Amino acid sequence: MHLELASAETAPQVRVVVISHDCDLANDNLNAEPEVEVLVGGVVAAMNGSFAWGKSPRTLHLQVQKGEGSEVLELVQTTKRRVPKTELAKFLPSAEHSMDQPGLSTLRSWLATRYNRAAFADTFVNRLRAAEADERLSRLLKPSGDLISFVYFRMEGGHTVEREDGDPYAFNIVLVFNPGEDAEASADRADALAEKVEADLQGRLKDPSSVVLKSCMAISEDDVSVGQAKVLTQWRLEHMTLRADEPQPGPPEL
Image 1 (cartoon, one colour):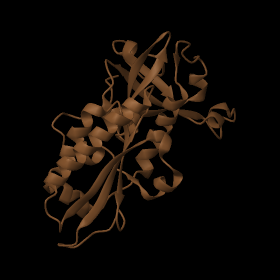
Image 2 (spheres, rainbow, N blue to C red; image 1 turned 60 degrees about the vertical axis):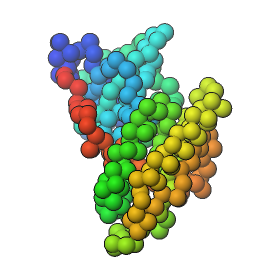
Image 3 (cartoon, one colour; image 1 turned 180 degrees about the vertical axis):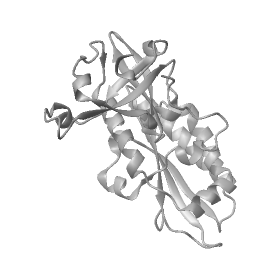
Image 4 (cartoon, rainbow, N blue to C red; image 1 turned 120 degrees about the vertical axis):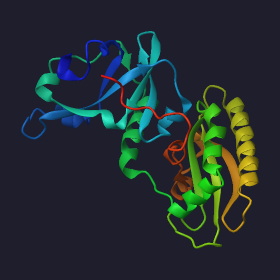
């Protein structure tokens, strides 16, 4: 097919998203900017909350407008391609597809996470894993993927510190939720989930010399302050889903 980005059989379900910066795209100096970067994605039947809002650094499910309706795209970080500007210039953007500002912001943030996502101390990750707290957290959050936008840990003493045996990690969990159209109902759901997460994980993290969960709280996207953002570290699903039972999505078949 065009630009060799899909086969004739898969083309109807393939969507190509241009991800180069506007200035790079408009630069007509082909010696300086001869190519454009694109993501080759595919249409999926439904949104998987575990891959919404950029929770996973490898796979993103993104809702885009299509005519009077919408469709869900699955994008994978490893499907980036570079195509010559001279070839891309032969085509016009889809007239029936568009992306709103929240979707665009999510896409930009997700693209950046491949290079700037935080790494937690191996000892901390291993202690959570030994108590199966990481997998349990994933399972508790999965049904609320449409509500919870981000999961943050506030680590006392730093998130990269390797601690010796008997020296515990203490942390708080912050669930950031999308207020949506009914902010009060969303807050009630998020608060109930935070209480459930706190009770469940504290029941699993029984060794006070290993990992101590001090609290779990929910906060609206609209209420996260700059000060809070500076002391919070995002816990991404890559820490949990690498051990999940179900297979992880790979690149769309082209």
